Length: 336
Ligand code: UVW
Image (cartoon, rainbow, N blue to C red; front, side, top):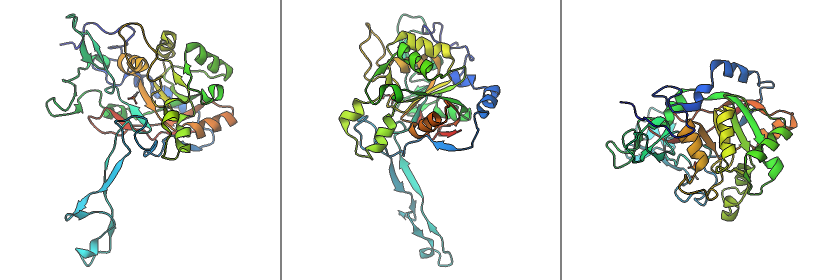
């Protein structure tokens, strides 16, 4: 049975296939990769991940904490610089082995398509149901702790993204150069001004990166962030601007990445009537299958591109191939 008879206005559900779980990643074709590879000119590389223990503390999001690293156990003892000769005198090995409790969206990350869904009446019975991209259902496909088998994304898990081998042509848009570190909500007109002034062109399949300076500010705060600055600094996209959302649709961009907390302004500006708390997340993750990258460290790459009169680069950024997870740390690499 089809999962939906009505799809949300402005969505592309079904256009990449009835059971598609990859969304706009489908636009990164083999031709697009060959085109992206022409952006490799010097071979220099940039790590686009923050150290995953930044921002530090839990002031940015109270439910997300830094990674907790522990040793595994060997013969009931911590497997940390374990002297094997204590068990086997003939061996000289020293062994460390660890386990980590990691909050997937704590630091540099990918939002999977199972990260944010919406209540929408897709079966036409007049009652909205909680759904994700392409009509996959909360409880049945994307399960929580109370559902059979426990929390697990049986559809739209982040492993689907990893299996695509995430690479493509990155395009940098430098918002910090125009707005500094002021907490500006950037709308369509503002974005077009920046694209025109900096001669930046976004084409179908491009992986768009927004540089705001936020992650660099986190690096500067060195693990002891100031709450006021965390919540009131740097540019964000105004998810309530319909023209901006239409541009995201029309541009054909494949993924949308930022070095700020949520790509969009959060909390979002007040909307009309009933609406999403995170309208750009709704538009990208739920309606169009556009993965969002957040808290990437883009400043060193952005500076290099500026100095070299460029905005494009080759980007490699798979998430963890962790079945059932809704997001993942992201350790992107840009090659220029
Ligand atoms: C927010 O929590 C605001 O966004 P995300 O879950 O995408 O980090």
